[in-house]
Image 1 (cartoon, rainbow, N blue to C red):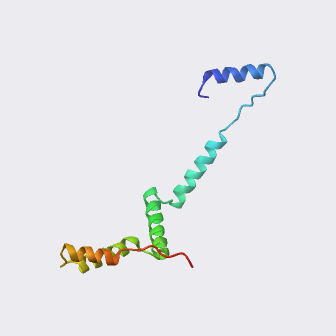
Image 2 (cartoon, helix red, strand yellow; image 1 turned 120 degrees about the horizontal axis):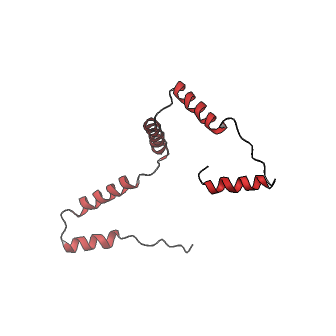
Image 3 (cartoon, rainbow, N blue to C red; image 1 turned 135 degrees about the vertical axis):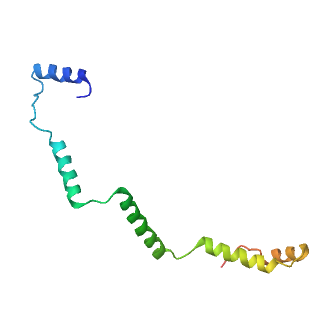
Length: 110
């Protein structure tokens, strides 16, 4: 017991017949933990690093399989197109290009 006052309090309650204290021959929880550790040694359970690597590999595969849209790739392609389109333009031509290619709100009146 971590706190000796708790042991004294429990003993006082037992003396007043409010609780019953039963001595246990063995630590059941400790036995369970020991059995689990022995079983893990026998089975050659993976280390935390091995488990982490496996989880990351499964996640990477799942992410690659479910990824329909690559934002970074799309924006890189857009940036490259704009760079190619505007490479040789002067300031006035650049302003005209920006006005012409500016996104306009969609008309929702239908």
